[in-house]
View 1 (cartoon, rainbow, N blue to C red):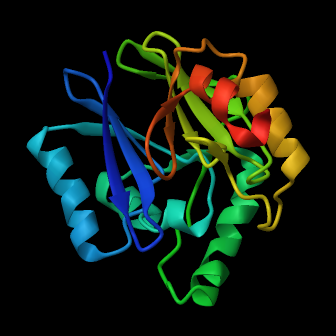
View 2 (view 1 turned 60 degrees about the horizontal axis):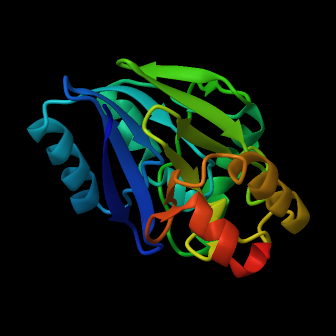
View 3 (view 1 turned 90 degrees about the vertical axis):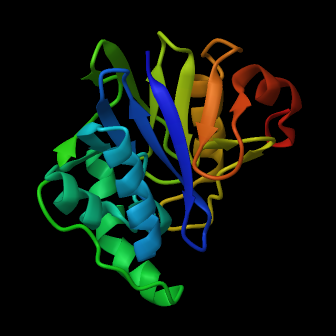
Length: 212
């Protein structure tokens, strides 16, 4: 069984997730800790739970989702996983930080690539990478069928969708990703987004105004 811990970090209020097993294996998804006290909060949680972090996973690499990536990679001696297309977004992130007056040290180092339907094992649990571009060109979601949840990044929110006015975004592509990749999941699937509160696939199919 996987536990899901959510931390909301940075002035952009991004959701960072820690998935962890009862025996202490963990994955950090989208480390967005910007301030030192946020890094301390995340590190203390991992230490208090005596977790061994096995994976750093990126849904995508907009600046708010990678603020803490360099720190996490150094702290846990890991290299991030992401879609190969998303590396170019990562390279652009420091310029975005300067533009938004949120300078930060961006990750630079080796990257493990994940493609559509690739899987990772966290203990006895399988995480499936689902390619869902539109908000960002190489966006991945992470789906756990055994426990009926998806870490959706900035694709689908509670009664909303990801913005598509950033470089590499495309509105029609995003809607297609949601309809063909996420709305085909069981309606009871819990959606854990990159901002805001969790929702369910069935609720969004029926009530999301962008998808009616």
